[in-house]
Amino acid sequence: MSSAQYRLVGADGSVLEAGDGDVTVAGGILELQPAGGTALRVPPGQIASVAEPEPFTVLVTLADGTALELGRLGRMRTQLLEELRDARAEGAARETGAVGAGVRFTGAVAASPADLHVFEDALLVVADGRTRRIAFSFVADTRVRDYTVFIDVTGQDGLAVTRLGRRTDEFAALLEERLREARTRTSAFLGSLLPGLDPMALRAAAGLLRDGVAAPARELDAIHRDLSASLLRAATRPDRLAAVASVAERADLAIGFRQVTSVRRAAVGVTPWHDPAATPHIGQHDSPGGRFGPGFGGFAGYGYGGPFGGGAAQFGGYWGFRALGVGLNWNPGGQPHMTPRPDMRWGRLIPETEDLAALTTSGADPTVLAFALLSPARGGDPVAYVVLNVPEPTYVYQAGGLDPRAAVNQALDDVGFAAAGLQATASGDLTAAHRPDAATSFLATALAATLPHDPAWPARLAGLLAAPANLAGPLRATAPARWQAPGRIPRAPRWRRPAGRDRRR
Image (cartoon, rainbow, N blue to C red; front, side, top):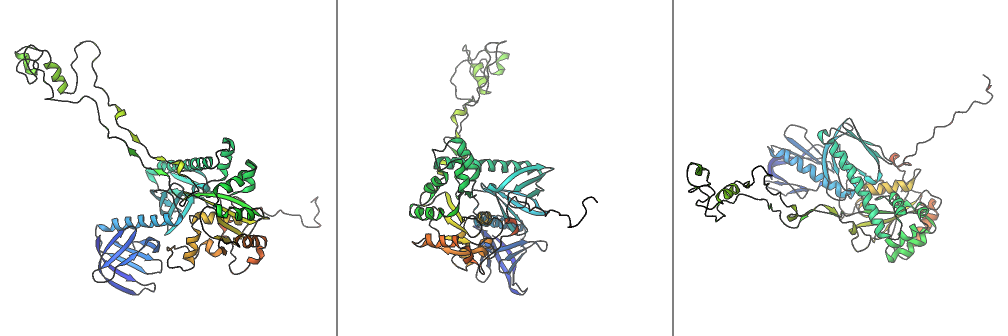
């Protein structure tokens, strides 16, 4: 908590309120408690931007245009900025469905300062008040050159990250590690779902069914003739399997899987570590004698009257060296006695691991979302998004462009496959969580129909896929340029010689 002077400025520039109050950031929510008034609570999703227009002044702009100006924060200004930055990153991670805990880096993208958060399934880039999600499934390549990390993304513009400083290699290495772990999880999940699939076929299927990417059924069946049908049976709820299968027979089917919950397990220790090596133990012996007799040589503690005993016994020297943590060499000229090394078997630690067996599409709360994208048999629009293992309605999109299914697939991945929550927010439902991009989202503008899973669902969906012209209307949308045919470059028109031109010239 920190004290501050505040001003609430409306979208038109008028001052709505001013005074003194306490400012806190708890649970990702910015709270202003005026000295005499009602508290103002701002969730991270309602924050449009955070800036410092003047020295020692923090300006928080809300989604509706209202601005909260905070001054006289003193030393707490830096901490407040960091807490707001972390809160906005956590909010963006929830909105995009990022899996696991993120590792934060600070760099620059297109000459703009950026916060980069590396999660288990994606990279979130927060720059210029906007968040961009780059799923590892769509990352084609990463490379480092001249302290710049280049990331090639399928179907999108590439990314060049600079100003990482000494953490350049760490950032690049973490990206490679997370990409490798994502591929491993996909292979392990498919192996548990279809244990009868041979290793080479499993490897080929895992290359197609990357996390969040829908693979066409014809490409899956090229690996094994029963692969798409087996995946559909294993991942679909029993109450909707027959309906989905009947529609899929008359449509172009693509099947995909999306991990929605982290299966990473934290490191745990079994027993505390103890060092069994020899240590000084003065006073823990009971030897009554020393090695040497009385006299001048007894000053070292080996003879009579020394601190380690005296008399005729010859153990005083031994205990003297033991008190120093070493042993007395009874064999001059031979190999000296060494202090034993710690026995590491006494201290065991289970490192951080991934519980791959927890990846499943079954149960009331599955860790993997199974979905299908259905389009007309001849291709094109519309595209139906059907969740196979969770009771959600079907959303039909009129995407447009050269590859509507790829456009819908990537748009779903950008919002964490939370189509239901996005549509609820876009429709103005006050009980739905706020999403700043809901109204302008590609999925909201391209939505053509919402079909509940009732007995009439197969006939209604089959009718829409068979007669896409019926969907023409105000809800028809055109895919943004970045969704157009990933990886395809339009061919330039060929030059033709004008008619009548003499070829011999």
